[in-house]
Image 1 (cartoon, helix red, strand yellow):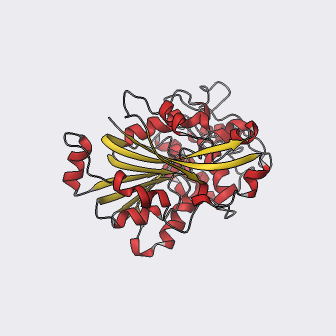
Image 2 (tube, rainbow, N blue to C red):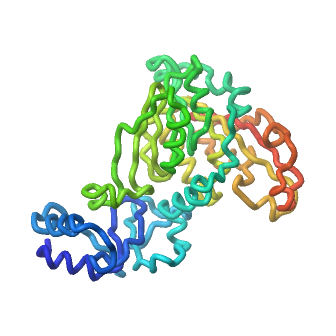
Image 3 (cartoon, rainbow, N blue to C red):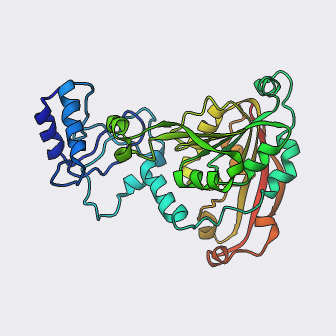
Length: 364
């Protein structure tokens, strides 16, 4: 370990942020030193203290660091990340950064949640869930892991990927066939709004794992990175995991049923295989998944646009391997938002119709 003031000089002289062993890191800590960032004196004192006691190693990223992880192109998950030298604070984020978990979540939060631009959020329970709950929440087949958990828990464990603040969670939690509900949402603001809007759930943050590597653990108020930190919120029969879906550890969910409305269709098609891989770790054999897909009709450019992206039963069949999933069943094709008029933004894109395809698949 370098001497305390040598460590201080290293930190001050670099224009790169710290690495972590996870998939993503929040790049952009600029010129760590009293002359460049107005952190309190206690911050610098803590760095000197950590250097003097040798409690851990601060890994400073440099131009010779390992290759960066770009989650939008599904690079090897175990690859370490590199934070390139930071651009000035006023500069726009790089394309690479926008594709990282940190950039993706920040962009989604700033563009949508902070601007109240959440047209996908409905003030009512989704019609497909209400109509087909009896097929999604039917008792699992005998001899499956899902049936074992269903019997032990006294009902289903229902998972909602990219859950936002959907009312579907509250609806599912009231069903007699359901023992517990798990939502996974990346944006902290969405989880807070959900908790505030449903006080009867008494949803509270019960566990936090700070992001940002070593400094995140020692100074979470400064280095709480939304992309790498995780939080668990619990209340009654509902648990919300605040984490990036693609980096979250989901194996403990052991879901026996999943409702996907606005998850698979919202992510870029290049991330779909990674999305399904994560889903496979979250569910157990015998679990059913109800998916609301999107069928765009019209110009080729309009069909290719999104979100929501064109995701039909054929796309779902290609994604959900026949080795691990049953053949998808198309339950219904209907007009988007229960057949209302085509939104203007779709018409301007050259589309003549946008339909929802309700699809059911089962984990083998």
